[in-house]
Image 1 (cartoon, rainbow, N blue to C red):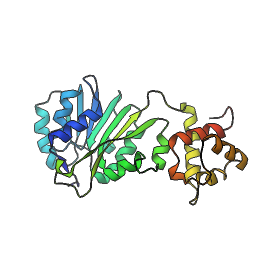
Image 2: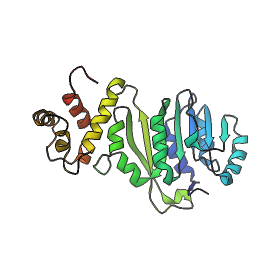
Image 3: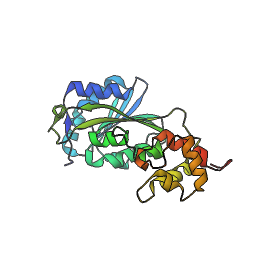
Image 4: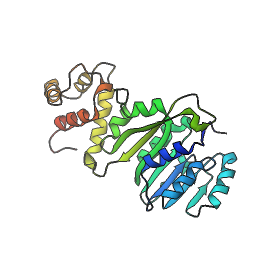
Length: 252
């Protein structure tokens, strides 16, 4: 059995579906479909739903739910080992919190993903979206391609059994136009690793390990970044500005 808290509250389910912004032409991949409460709501909005549930106990009820929904396919298998659909698709799910990191990683790696709307621990959602005033490496690394947003909070009473932690609604949306060209992304990711790779201290100090200090000084001034700013407190937009200012002309 997976440690999962099943959604039963209609208001919370509607909140998730609204945040997902899906329409009748959309393909939705639901992760952690459970007994199908969210699945029914997704089926009313989306053109087609692929409902994944690996736990055989709730999957038995999910099969019954899907039998009455002609646009839904029930898949009793591990979402993390499933291939991504060939056509554009959105992911929606009340996911097992212990699997949040690999599920988010799957979403970021899927070429056809347009968005992912996931119920996670509130602390995780806040951390990834800068809601604590700090920014994580994963968020900064993927920022040119994905927008990260805290789309809401869900009460403990919306779940059975009620979780011990607060829950949040994390939304990842692929940018229609990336903030960097695709051929610049490998260099940008190396830049982010250099910035986060220092032993404490500031982003300025970390970048000086890979670039001439005078160039880093000038770039920091242009990006309005104080030299003593800790790396986690640098906004993603400042990372992009620094990268554009420091990379060699004509190189990705």
